[in-house]
Structures are given as structure tokens and as C-alpha cells.
Length: 194
Image (cartoon, rainbow, N blue to C red; front, side, top):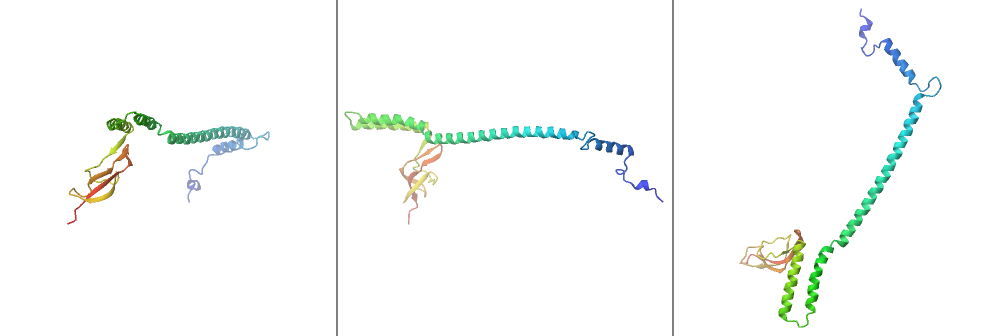
């Protein structure tokens, strides 16, 4: 016959001294001691109070952060409104000089065609300087390949030039930082009918 102690798993065999130590530790941590008040209950009460204090602090931080986010959102919305409302202020200021030149031309006492022509040329140069300052670029596509993103074809005419070539510009276009403000109105070439 075999020895019954050999079939016992190593984990299941606990030394009697270890078992007694475990029992004493369990008794020491039991909810009630000799006085009837659990030592861990006081610790739990302190831990609960600490946790409630920490929760109150975190809630206060949350409320403050939420209020700050609302203030940031409101200020951002106001900034967007101001940008939309006053975004043209710089170009409007630059255009005032052009307007002043036009007003001065109208106040000339003895106008001649030549003086008007000179005044209009000066005013056109001022306007061109304003356009350059604000990156407004003229689009004059005469002789170029038709580009539907920058040109608007209003006629297709028979021509000796290759098909889809701009042969006539009725109205120049303009771009602002490479974005089309107004497409050029053009007539494009089409193949001649035989």
C-alpha cells in the first residue's frame, strides 16, 4: 500500500505553525476587538473623510475648469464675430486713399480730358498698390489654356487657335492668396467646322 501523505498536493500541506499565525492575523483584523470598537472602523472613517475631502476638491476643480472652458468658448465666439466684423478694416483703410484721390479729381475746377486721364492713371496705380499689399492678383488669361477653376467661359468661337484656348477676355478675374475672388469671363476657341 502507498503512504497517504504522499498524495497530498504541496499547497494543501500547511505547517501547523503557519496555520496558527494565519488564524491570529485574522483574529486581529476582525471587526471587533476586546473593547467592541473595530480599529479598522476608525481607519475606514478617516479614509472616508479623506476621500470625501478629495472628492470635494476635485469637484471644485471640475467646476472651475468647466467655467473656464465656457469663458474660453464665449471669448472665442466673440473673437470670431469681431474678426468677421472688422476683418476688412486694413483693406478699407488702404482703400480710403484711393477714394480721396477720386474725390480730389472731382474737385478740379478746370478739368480737361488729359488731367482726368492722368488722375485716373494715378488712382489706378494706387488701387494696384492696395491689391498688391493684400495679395489680390489680377487674372488675365488671354492665350492660355481654359481653366474652369479660374475662368468662366461665356462663349465658344471658331478659331485658328487650339481648342479650349482663351481667345478673348471680357472681364479680368482676381484671386486672393490663390483663391478665386472672381473668375475671368472669357471666350474660348473651338475647332472650325468643315
